[in-house]
Image (cartoon, rainbow, N blue to C red):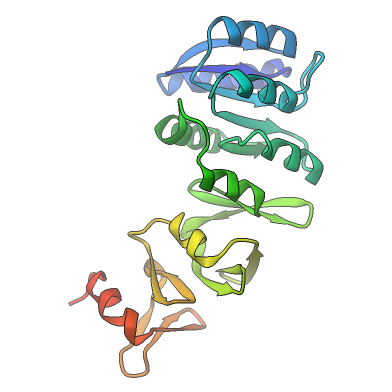
Length: 244
């Protein structure tokens, strides 16, 4: 597995290179400008690109990714200090596997790289992944949810439940609610199936957050929230829980 870095900040580029070596992957090359990057990538195509958006040269990172995508199916992780919505929308057209905003921690970088290597390296984005970028959510072990002009990071483990809201879905965490432009069925399909289960056609709960289940009233209690448990879902829901 080979990775290529396009980054014009030497210290950050060195940090990425050390992390890649620590994870046991090989470096295909490193460049700080679009001209050198394009030449080296065409000469020796890598399996994964770590691409800064703001780079030196004729093209920025997004333009460079689009040029490369015409000839190669190389997954891209964008890493940028830019938080504006225009940059996000431009980046989404290249179908990256991740969009990270600096400052970014080593563990976040590591998980992004490992997930890309495991699931996406060597193939073009699927229809589902393309659609997800056109909506408001990007998945990893967390979600990046678009809130106005910023991307807000929400850990999947902190989600209490998700609920249908017409063509939208609500993501409920402790003390906060997000409304995203994606149907509940699509959102639920992207969450860990062993952790998130439907209680109703309009609700999917995080089973690790359940406090009580009222079998008479058919209600699931998660903190102060009472989620309905439909008769249709009840038997299957209870079968898949670890209860005695």
